[in-house]
Length: 332
Ligand SMILES: NC(=O)c1ccc[n+]([C@@H]2O[C@H](COP(=O)([O-])OP(=O)(O)OC[C@H]3O[C@@H](n4cnc5c(N)ncnc54)[C@H](OP(=O)(O)O)[C@@H]3O)[C@@H](O)[C@H]2O)c1
Image (cartoon, rainbow, N blue to C red; front, side, top):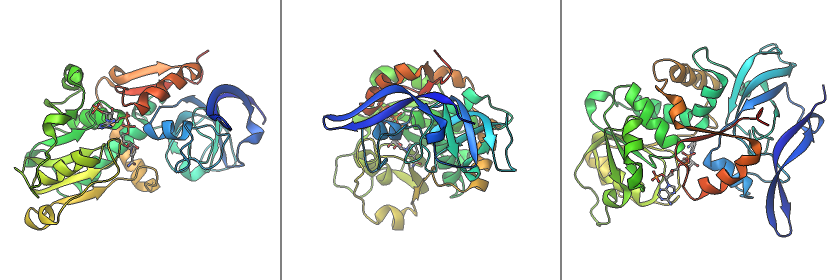
């Protein structure tokens, strides 16, 4: 089956990287087991890096970014999937060096494909997407290291972003008391509306002292920003508390001492959504479509067409997006 389709295509030119909506052909996609017609994708920070020529994410251009895709199987040589199945793909190599969800078709190995969980529509699965999956994985990492709602408050940093917003929403569903850390004072009402019990400004939260530890306040932290905010979180965990380190929007670097680890028994936990093994991946998607499914998911979405997506890519790089941007691949 050969089909023409539209994609947001990124090309390297002598003057820099340009992106435009163009028509491509499915016979140029990699020869993989499952061809999927994409209905919805989602915009993640990593997509913006790929779309602007970050070779740590995407090595070769021209390229179609998009680490998230949800749609319907158009063709499959794998017995695990048949034409018409509703499915989603997040992570692995999708949108990094395998053409991604900013195109109307993707071709992927069957081992990357998750059947759409029964509690989610295709669109809801992308409002969650990598951001929601990462939030679910971070909570899983915290809970398997002893966190439960009775242990105390959970802090979420980069709170107005995709991972931050969805972390607050699923923590609420799981019965936690949460504190949101944001740079945006004007977004306090938004944060309280999606489930934060309290919002704190990043500048007020950040500890600039040289103290190795400060008052222990957090049973758990989901950190999406790194840098000084991660440093502050490590200094202010309560006894046996853990930080799940997800992101680096402030900085990839941080410094610490051994004191939180040897005096308060704290944990610094890694979160890698892209490489999560399929059994754990399905377990987390089942929870995200069941007991952890946020109420009013649609309240954090901004739906756009492929043509409108480029503007949102510029905004996410500046940390200006609130919630989730959902490209509708069927929109005219
Ligand atoms: N480990 C994984 O598997 C995984 C998966 C997904 C994403 N990530 C990473 O997690 C991070 C967040 O991703 P996302 O998709 O949620 O991005 P996003 O929607 O852009 O959210 C990031 C948030 O971080 C805050 N922020 C941005 N720039 C900042 C700066 N210079 N200093 C301090 N805070 C800043 C902003 O929130 P406020 O304005 O509210 O503070 C922003 O909304 C990224 O680094 C991404 O690469 C990792």
